[in-house]
Image (cartoon, rainbow, N blue to C red; front, side, top):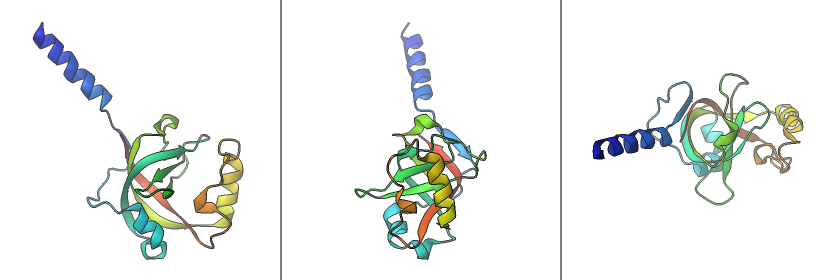
Length: 147
C-alpha cells in the first residue's frame, strides 16, 4: 500500500511540474536580465538572448505574443512570434517563461496593426509600442519553456 501511495505521489508531481516546450529547443545557457535589455536596447538589437520572467499578458487573439516581467517594478518586455509558429497558451498568464529570441526594433505600423486587433482584449496601451518612445523593441521569440 505504501509503495502504491509513493508511486501515485511521484506521478502526480510529474504531471503538475510539467513544462510546455514551444518552438525551437533553447540553446543558450546564460540568461540576460530584462532590465539590461530595456536600458541598452540598441546594444542588444539583433542579438540572441535568453530571458526569464513571469508572464503578465498573453495575446488573446492568436497567442502570438506574451509580455514578461523583469525583476524591477514596471519592467516588462514583449516576446512576439510569427503567427502559427508558436502559440502561447492563453492560460499561461501568471506562469514563468524562459524564452530565447532576437531583440528587434518594432516598426510603428506593426504596433498600430496589432494594437487595433488586440484593443478589445487589452485596455492598457502596450509599452513597447507607446507613442512617447521613438524606437520600440521586443524579442522575436524562437523557443520557449512555460513552467
